[in-house]
Image 1 (cartoon, rainbow, N blue to C red):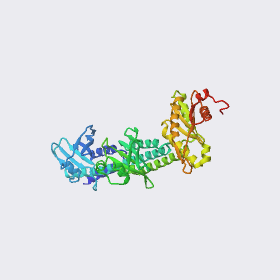
Image 2 (image 1 turned 90 degrees about the vertical axis):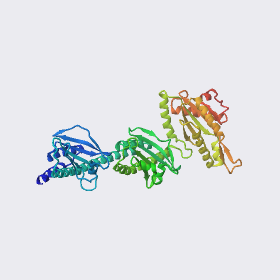
Image 3 (image 1 turned 120 degrees about the vertical axis):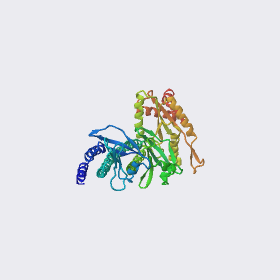
Image 4 (image 1 turned 60 degrees about the vertical axis):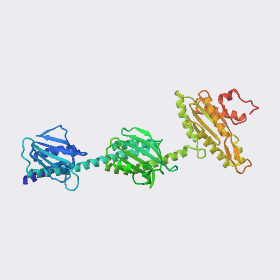
Length: 491
């Protein structure tokens, strides 16, 4: 008895230190157990999903490279051992074998088993040997749990540091889309997830709009085509409303995690992560960390959306909804850079509302503002997606027309002018009850009419002036104006 206690004490003192890895602990424990219990071979098995897997096997001081899996079935002796219904399993045939569970005090499930074998003897292990082996296994189980908990804490700390760095990168990103992609790539990498998807709330329309998805390889794809009404029975809508899970959600609750994003009690979106491809369970500790980090994601997304809204206010005219002159000049330089390096054609159009001063003087500035607002709405509705209009000053609008020759631009502006002629501005206090609006439009093209932004705008303005001298309500290119230059009398 005294020798057994001394052996257990030595075992305890040698294992009771910090092991960086689980493998280092198991290797040391098996060597120490070999010196404590007389056996030819000692193996340590750890529990998997419904089985026991051999991790280390020591045979007379030689490590064996071997794979062995023991499948567990209900009612089997090893299953009873792991469930705590037996203290040990001992066999004498074909040779002496002893199994003891890796289980400490309390109700925690066993982590596996230690197996001791005497390959050349059928003499069973004695009661004292079984008792000592059980105590060694309990000591190993306690240290294994401690090592795993320490590794889990270090892993979580590393993830927290990585996620904090990601949050900092996100906060410094120029656009929500760029920041979201970076943070989802970090989440899938740090938590070994198959996929992460982000949906943002459009409160005015009461829908969840897809933003971006990232797969396990870090590849990002747009979800902009996905829209989920929050009034429907879609599972995402149920999560956002706080409804209970449906049958499908319960079935995959260990592999799909829904993380609502909220700021000051207001939902702004939904983060969905899953392991549907690998079918691996998302650990509870990871879910807890993801839920706490979802708050940081929500705050970062909300801050960036607010920044973009403020930035948009500084880049777009509040009355017409068109870009301001400063933003237009920036885009103009970018387009010129492309076209100078062999890009497609580029034209610029200047639009001036006819008799706009008369509108303001005769009907008031409110009617004048309404006319400009309707002009801006019509321009945004009728132009191509690649065109870029801006309010240049007062009632003047300038439009960049990429991939358009002067002739192409004249056709586009001609169609716009036809639509403008159909526009009616309500004026209830006038006898006509409505106001018709026309405009004069001048066009210049790169490079034949100019190679700089200043030259092109000047040439387009000259073409616009030519239209005004010929009665207004028309479209003219700079080349046309040169060939049909008005006389001094026309001016």
